[in-house]
Length: 188
Ligand SMILES: [Fe+2]
Image (tube, rainbow, N blue to C red; front, side, top):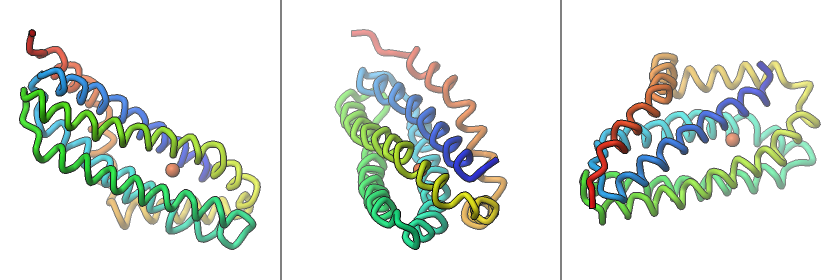
């Protein structure tokens, strides 16, 4: 896999998880008793897979290389977006902590936090697709092997192979878990 393809695959995994999260938050806001650990697991996925691993690859390996080329401005802007995302994840984490399954008010608070993070993430990924990935192909093509090796190293050192695999399995099973939670909607 090329470095660009690794990032694309991670973007699409993040968007799939966001889709599950939005459905779960919608059910919670309607008063369904969504297990709190479902949100806790998605929070872990966002903190570890999306932020520590994926953003770590971009910030540690990619952005410094872009800064040495003519694309420094893109790197600065996207890194600032990562900081914005971290603040939104903290708000989401707070909302998960105070969520009471079956309680519409705390479910609605959770949904607002998820909406804000979801809007951010979709726009951020669209920006990276439009600017970062083409800049990589144009400017960093000759460093592709080095980048792929460095990405693998970050995955192993910062996340660990076992955790990475566990988070992928969690993603695979999340659709069913959300289906079950949403089906248990409280009438009225
Ligand atoms: Fe990214």
